[in-house]
Figure 1 (cartoon, helix red, strand yellow):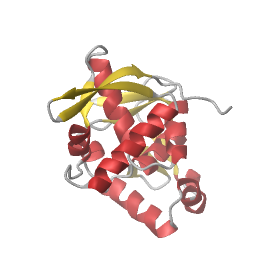
Figure 2 (figure 1 turned 90 degrees about the vertical axis):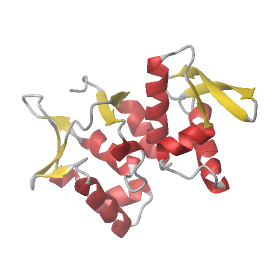
Figure 3 (figure 1 turned 45 degrees about the horizontal axis):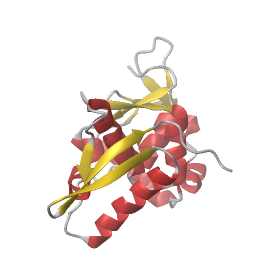
Figure 4 (figure 1 turned 45 degrees about the vertical axis):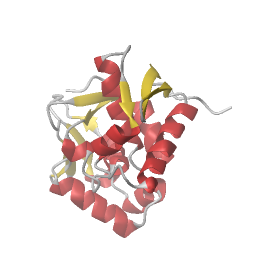
Amino acid sequence: MAKAGKRRLPLDEVFIKDKKVSDLVYGKFQIESKFTEKGEARIMESVKLNKSQWAKDLGLSRPTLDTKIKYLKKVKLIVDKGDYFEIPEFGKTYFLIPDATLRFLVNTGNADVIKVYSHLGALWALDKTEASFTQRQLLTTLGYAANKADNHKKVEDILCSLVNNGLIEYKEVRKGKNVVKFLTKFSHTHKKKV
């Protein structure tokens, strides 16, 4: 069970690697959800799903939002119970993210930013002194082809956004033909507007 003020994001392949899974839509469900009175599950009342507003908030068309919600149901990241949606604790490995940070990342509208942030957070949690990754490893983790320039640009943009907003810092070290990025900072506090 996630701690109060935090959300539990799965780190398994269904969430991280499946490109059809929208981290932004899933994040929106997480933000709008609450624990049941007994604290056994996280739920969101169906009336909170104002599709027109959600589509606007997420920069999606209504049909695209419907498709993304349908897919989240298909892979059981959310379960439609009629009057409410249940957000099950999915998978054995997960990353806890503060509500405010998750809301900020959803509001960026940058697809896959939550997946990347969660993955890097898990690396940081394992070893703060040697948490490292290559762009190719990150692309593979996300389920993207590492031989396409557009995919590299997408990951570069996500990393730039995370750095510019004060959520991560890293240094690059060239090892042969590869450039390894070593995390030097991982934060749950994003920069406030100036």
